[in-house]
Length: 349
Image 1 (cartoon, one colour):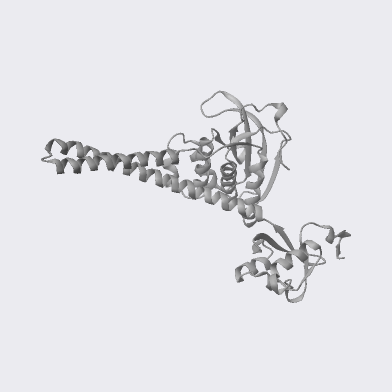
Image 2: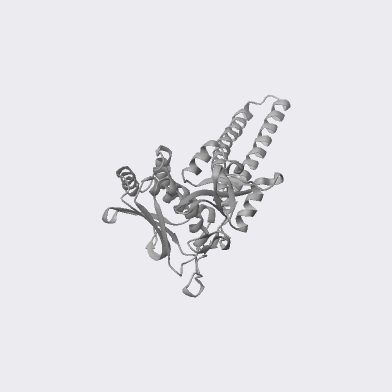
């Protein structure tokens, strides 16, 4: 059994291996033995860093101590090399759930884009079909014989059938994605985990505090996670010293209504660079016209605008403040109807 500072490494759930000469790996616990067997496949457990199947760039980043992604057996892992006073170690974390969530959110975003494009096409085709019906009506007084009447009848009938199909398609495209009443932990934790690597790359520390009792909200969980993720990335790309995430209940007037109970996800970045603050100040002054702005914005500003649009679709809002030189983003969702103190469950750990 390998020990570090008196702590038995083989008791850890996280896979750990010591790194020897020429990248040789010595598993320190059963979790790493299983992982090495997974990477080795039919050829047997991998015995060195070279057996992890990393490309040149990933190998260099791993050697520099940066976290890198690796896949084996349909699972995704984050690997990191850590040097301590008593050796060099390889740590692994199973991030399959996180990667699948990110993939599903990307797929949902693409599906929404495709649906918007399809709706635009449906609208244009409907206009063309309307012109066809108008043309048939104009020509009907000028028909000369039964053959002309037959042509116009077929044109009218076919156009009406096509218009009915388009109306059915438009109705299908406009159907809302089903919402569900969820605990905030169902999407906040996932969003924070997904942006963790971006925070490490930018050298930004991320901390989080969550109140013990939170109102549940009616949202599409993947969209809500995307809102938190985009706002976090906006802050992180502003290169603050640190970012703090606070999750708790509050009362706020949102969506033009009176003050009501809300879930607030507060993101605060300390000492963001001037460009990030200027973009936030500009967005904070906007009311309507956000859709047009989104088309002209470049990242990271587009991230924040996209998040605000998604929030408003869910009946929520975004508040931007600048207390004591910090940049604060308050993401607000209305509490689900029927949410009372007695049925507010603790967020998932």
